[in-house]
Image 1 (cartoon, rainbow, N blue to C red):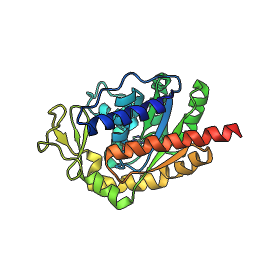
Image 2: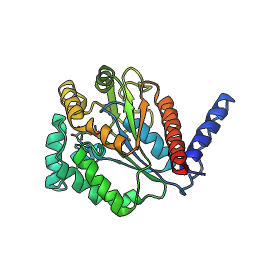
Image 3: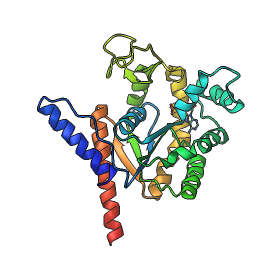
Image 4: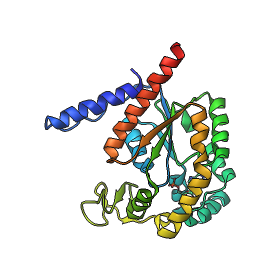
Length: 264
Ligand code: AMP
């Protein structure tokens, strides 16, 4: 059984348990015979982080988010920060992309973790064709072929609405939305009681800059991965749980199509 089959089966049995009034059972450790190695693409605010949470919680995939890495660097004392981290923070606060050299240095430092037996999930990386090229070389060297590149699609206005209403927990990083996913108690995290805040780069001025950066630098990645037969487009216009189900189904269909092609 592949990791993907295992996950679809777990989701189905949890859905059946819920409809029968039972609580869902926590998933057993997933098999690691065929790791899932995924890149999540999509404009900022499309819900990549939430989907990444689903994947890593349910399957233990190694989740690497360059954005989370830079945000964590912000919390370090000036003595703890490297020059690269300071540089990254200046770009990030303005909503601009951090230079490729800085991003790639961080990815190379963490490359050993990509060898996780269950697989990995890259969220927010790569963001430019140069980053995608460097990643391709790194993965070829490490013999870690990609399973698929999931591209979450949503109209731009909806993305802007999502970003401006997004709130993040300062403690556990859980993500909420003022309208579509509000916390039970205003400004307080349901999971850990931490304070919810609006990310600096979710403020209106930064959102505009981030959308331009996405259109100019990240959109070309869609073609890059389409040419390699890895792109799996997913409409991101439902609830996070429904989008997750769609993602699993999309990955399964892509896997079946690939198998049919190799058999020919
Ligand atoms: P994210 O949480 O992925 O939206 O990232 C937040 C910010 O971190 C971005 O707006 C960029 O300033 C920076 N960042 C994160 N990942 C990258 C990347 N792969 N390349 C360049 N900048 C990045």
